[in-house]
Length: 494
Ligand SMILES: Cc1ncc(COP(=O)(O)O)c(C=O)c1O
Image (cartoon, rainbow, N blue to C red; front, side, top):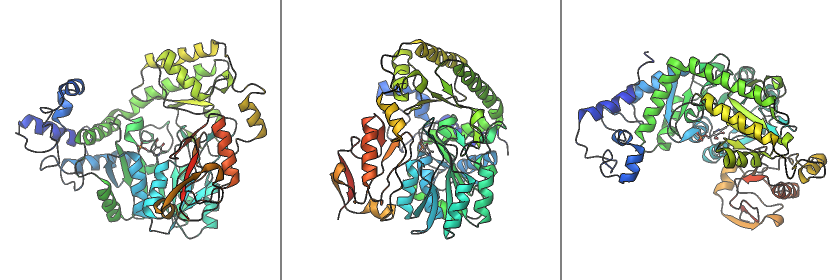
């Protein structure tokens, strides 16, 4: 196929050129009825291609024309048998792949540190999760991937598993040994589903980890908007082989999609594919070189650490995405949260993510040398500063807790109900402090390390209550609950 073409973007341009008089949605009618200040800011062109499915423009729900061709081009570019454009992120991809692959009550092995959309998939599909523990680096307070040994052990303990679901790479850019895991999973006759939200670029550069499609995943999802150039929310679901029924996957996707997809978003997927297929390797070479140089220069600044190749081969770190630059700021006496706030306040730099020890910055095909220089300069200055309070100093609250080992995650609590049943059951709020023994109806995930300590359907234990209260005291954020301060918790009504 001709990867230089962008058939869907072209279809929208053709419509604009044809001068059709529109009597259809959206109601702003190519910008004419739109608030002027907004239209002037976003520009006439984006309004002109904000159209609706119709003959010649094709329909994402039932593609037969330009979207069909655009998806086929994407499948070829990523080495899949079929590719589907998503406009609700990898979030919807994770949910759809679970609903397509698993029947209610069937078992699926999932890493405990999956993105919360995995839990959405469990709730929607009614699957029974068998949790696999990821490897945790206590020094950097980071969770990594699950190992092939963990996957093999889980299959051995649960021979009735239907599928194995993996997250690779992690938010920190650490990739699992997908080739070895694929051999184990398919060797045992199970399906392999991969959340590759952070790795849409892997397929286009030999220095990047093996892509999930090349590893032979049955279904995988990429957030094209995260590391490539598509608009926010744009993602792709790739399907390979016959283990996951294509007709069921298509039926699920249709149920999830709006009947009025945002067409500029769909077009941005088409052109992001064209860009990667035709110039991806060159663009990524420049990005990788810039990120590697930044990592090396940051590592020369006393007090900073930016992990790289030297960690490769440790448990759960099979390979690395060099374009994720994780700066461990603990040695400067800052928490990642503080460093992130200072970078923003003093240097107008916004990083992707911060946790207790680290800040994570993305280097993508849109990152300029000038921006990288500003990033390095900001850290040089931060390192020169006198810290008023060293958060990690001996006798400081964090150091004390690290020494006592209270950062260790509590044991995974017993599962009393399926996530779906607990999530959909009548619920009530009770005082968190007094909730021991109740069945949780929400997910509580401290960052770091981003591993849920409790998920819907699990019993709240005293150990969990104490652990989370200590985490909160130390300033760790708890994601997921209705009440972020954990005064109350949502539980299944008795
Ligand atoms: C591992 C992982 N999977 C899935 C998602 C969801 O992706 P999206 O934001 O494209 O819906 C995220 C978002 O951060 C993620 O980190």
